[in-house]
Length: 141
Image 1 (cartoon, one colour):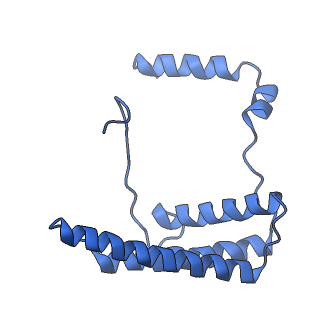
Image 2 (cartoon, helix red, strand yellow):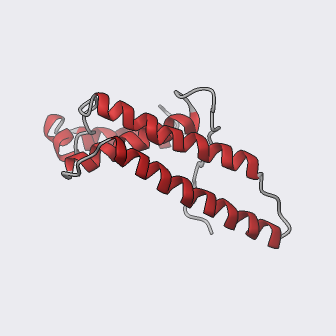
């Protein structure tokens, strides 16, 4: 199914050896954002919380790999289970790493401001963005 006339979907490498790149970085960023959001909602977070999240993620992820592997076999396809499980192990470790970062400094990064706040600071931002998109669509940017 097409979801748009123009859709630029970019697959990223896992980047096992570089926590600042690819899915490695993305998984860390997502976990840290999740922990910050939970904290703003009043959820008390501690080291045991991260172990529980990691264990739950790990079990569900391995079960899904099993299901996807079975689907692949039934459809005559191959799934690289080893690399999939390596990625799961990396992401599980990143759940704990992000937890350690959060506990060390729970206010490390502020959330991105809301659009209302941005528009209050830059009242003509939407018009400027629209003009930039129009120029880009004409190939002039």
